[in-house]
Length: 410
Image (cartoon, rainbow, N blue to C red):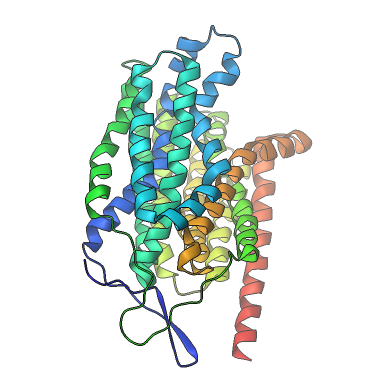
């Protein structure tokens, strides 16, 4: 294996970011991209089969609670377990954590093909969530470990892959749902080759600096201040990020589209904006965290305000596409920033904090939007209000970024 360097070296009185030298960088990158798609796959692939799940289990007591848990249980388990699994990844090794989690994902995700009890299916989905937490935290840390200064490029590709994966999974899940309620679970078989690729190509990163006389960043206790900052910023960003994906279908249908197939096509087209946003992230990668976040937030905020005011489905779709451009920037911005706040030995846990905050934001987004809508007269007014809030926070981020530059220049 080629020698690896850390992502930061220190020269006399300065810190310089470098690119580690690793073997098979492209194959490693493909495995890590696939790993970051697993949370999307865990949920999106089953969206089209929800009606059939209700047909299958609707007669059971508490079916209204149990059936949605088949979809939401993985995200809940990620939110509850990610920081602790991230801590284990830092202690046990990221390669080991990734491979164990990948294997658990394959087995537990395919398990419903052999199960008929809704309770056992929910239990298997809980294991999927635990596996997701391990995969996301370990692969997120490994992206920074392997690629250093180049990690932003790979984070952008991960964002593009997530968007394409989500679109394809909706189509595949819908087609398989027409076969049976179990058929969409077959989709998870595509993770098997990536699991074996992980076993072959993923290697444990080394902490030492290349033999250039550089000194590694000092180790120490976990920086809780940085962890709390990641949680706070990511939680707020996640709530605002998820407003459009969780509610745009209802807006499209409320503006006159009665066909679920047509709604799905509209959403697939608007999601192309996400890919554009991932490309823009690479263009703005050197702008600094606060300015990047302000650019993404402005696009999201304008899009949400437009959706809130739209009276026709095509107008709403146009604003949704703009919002998706901003959304395509958000995850790589937050991940890149989070990874840069801590040194090598704490990356697994910091990515775990990020994952917990992001998935909690996903959970609380709809209740917040519904509460605002109940108070001011509907979903679209609530989306507009949340768009205004996003624009206000984007302005705050701009001011903080400008202030930081002035301090640095002083």
